[in-house]
Image (cartoon, rainbow, N blue to C red; front, side, top):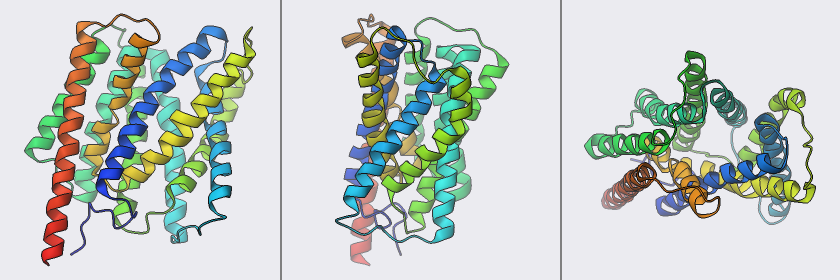
Length: 321
């Protein structure tokens, strides 16, 4: 019987998929630092920055796809499944990013972030149980609980924000967009014909850029700044590393690894952001930040090891059969 968690659908081994997800989570954490630097030297708003992030990532991925197609053919995938993958990922990505920014504006950074990233794993675990029959198990439940506790300490350990119902609703909507992307990627990966992760990412950025353009236009697409070269360099970095590279690695890894494990590994994003804030931006390392980081890393390590052990057991069982 085929292993539903194996790499048969995508061609990637579980270990490499876990590595891809870890790199993606750390890279995403650098986007916030780059955005903070952009805000310091220009008047560019968050939705305009998100638009340029999608557009820049799209341009870079189109270039990479053009070079790659000279050497290898694109993997085949049924047209209906490909359309579902592209539209679902593009819409989910747009909802995730835009609703998160709106939540932060409505109820503050701390509350908006903890609700979005805290609700994400819960929605993913529930959705995976209902749609794919995935079970956390005792160890997985403990790890997810520890990850959520660490995230809560990390985000709420600093200054508290005012809680507003509209902001909470927007944060949950953002978490639903992220959960939808993860579950769709995992489900299609399990069904076989996992598609081209890089092409899927490029299409998602294209849809996101189109959907964000009217809002970003109203906010102001072009920044006013006394340091245009620095702003351009930061925008290029945001488009290249935490966008084009990170999302391509994420979609490739999420097609192989269990959805609940993916959701917790992606919590490396606030951990890497906290480290960058202390080391590069001069923010003070609090006890809450340190404790939250340790809890999150412990949860990520535990789930990654459990995923690797499960894959090894199933490989041995398949070899015996």
